[in-house]
Length: 73
Image 1 (cartoon, rainbow, N blue to C red):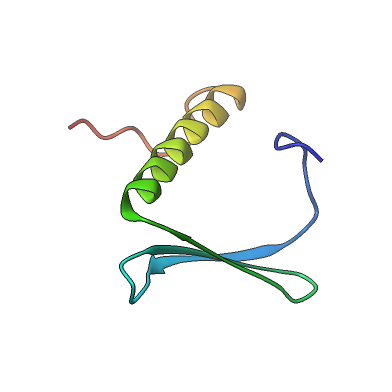
Image 2: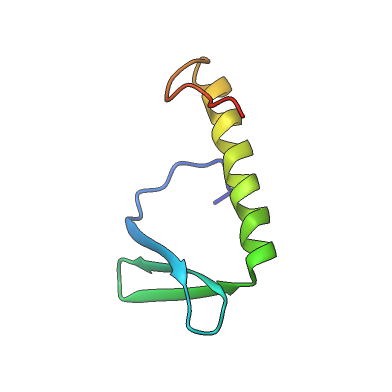
């Protein structure tokens, strides 16, 4: 399976800070799979930027406009 292939696997995701000053992305999937992923704050910000870029690319693939309008800074 590649990153651009549809999947029927269901999972839950939680994101938050740890008591060690890290950012944890916690994924829980079917079959009892639990995956805690810890990142330092700088890495977490890079991941957030990649998520935003992927969301924008997905909007373009889906036909443009869908979703919320972009906020101006």
